[in-house]
Length: 72
Image (cartoon, rainbow, N blue to C red; front, side, top):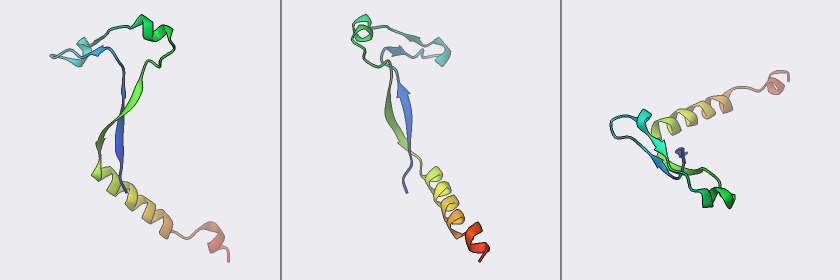
């Protein structure tokens, strides 16, 4: 199992170096007028710990008897 963490990218975002709070956005009126989306999703990183946790949780659920099987 592989888990990829995604993040939202907003074109024109300017992140402030001392603090994320100081970030600002540049607007592109031409892009807005053309109907281009104001954000898109990009892959950020893979998370092996989360993948391992999810795989274990799925295995645990698959090994539990279902209600239907318990009534037989």
